[in-house]
Length: 122
Image (cartoon, rainbow, N blue to C red; front, side, top):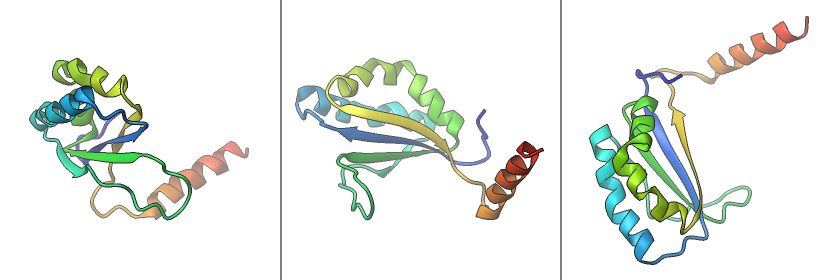
């Protein structure tokens, strides 16, 4: 289930990208597929500065008004038409994440997890 009251994010991790005509075509077209859904680049075209663990690829982050918007973009005919250009020329993972509400504090999640652990210990 998505929450349309908080921002959503499409995050892609790409390895072994075969830079050639297909990837360049994908890169040229992808922006026009997410803009109608309120998407905007947050991270694109920069190598991560890895501080812990292995991360041998590139990370792309696109922000949307909600996770629902990100899901609708991914399922859209325009994006589905070009997805093979990326998928066939890289190893990649793409995920949609729901952001946190304004004012969120980690203690909210801690309380939910603590309740789940305690109710499971009956």
